[in-house]
Image 1 (tube, rainbow, N blue to C red):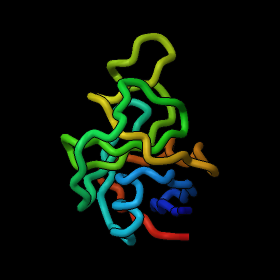
Image 2 (tube, rainbow, N blue to C red):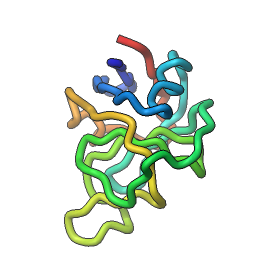
Image 3 (cartoon, one colour):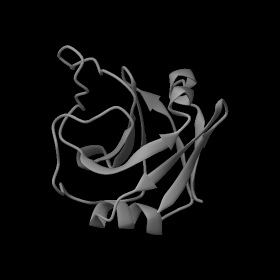
Image 4 (cartoon, one colour):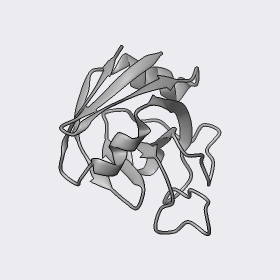
Length: 121
């Protein structure tokens, strides 16, 4: 399940996994949202409401996560304010739903409040 996430500064492509959370996200596309940033994480609320599904406390660079408490999609590209060392730690556990497969560097240019479009490829 390939997706494109477009910002005013460029776009990234991702591939969602076969988890129930990822399927629910894909089924709701396209989605328009507004960016928030937290360290080297871009996140935004989406109209998907799922509980923890194999949630993890740390993720890898390029992971796409779903954050159940905030009903948000999270794009991880480096440490967050609560990371220790080089780890990438979300605010609380996330369901890893996919991986960014191109243009990860675009996320460095994303600012709070930017418009986002998430769509199927």
